[in-house]
Length: 262
Image (cartoon, rainbow, N blue to C red; front, top):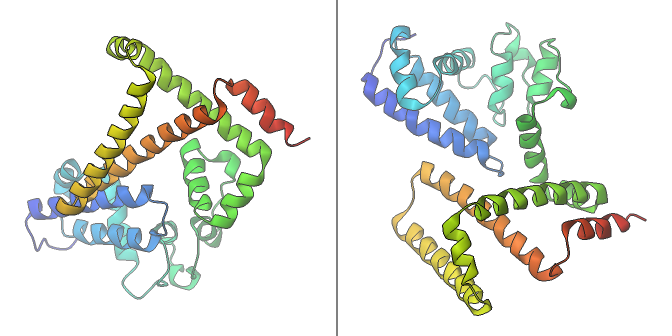
């Protein structure tokens, strides 16, 4: 690793900032692979300035494991600027980093799977993926409107999603039912109270948006806000489904959905 040109604390602080950005990009559904590549290569460049014996300090401050920091540095040193396609994502660069013929093998639009095949490695099949990897792959695919439409047209897939949503709803309801304060409050809530709560919630969301636009949010807080809004969207979806179906049970709704196939 090269000689440090900045203090260890300065490097650790920037790596921590890049770590937060890296996590936010990993969760984003937009096309951010090139930006994430640049973030990780920048981390690798910073790590090359840190003596190996001091990587533990950067790891502790940044949230990355020492091994991961070393991987970033290895990839950065393996791929100087201008040696990979402009649209290359980070994963194929990482996959080919130790391949002596990497500059000849890297191609535009290459995926990690393509890179592994190019270096002669064993290619994982979807059946061997972890549930998290499968989930990430599906969410990325669904960012394509045409893919999302085809998935939505499949009745069995919609039924599987409905079952999963029902399981999540039951878990949410069970946690709520175990909360004594929530139980006592529900006993006093009338129909008018429910409407007032919905209006108040909308007002608070608008206030939060105005405040965010006026004051701004850090990268980390943006990621937290997106997660909170995703959970809120799920709750609103459940509420809308209840209003549309009344007291119809999930099993009855699922039976109606599956009957569309016949």
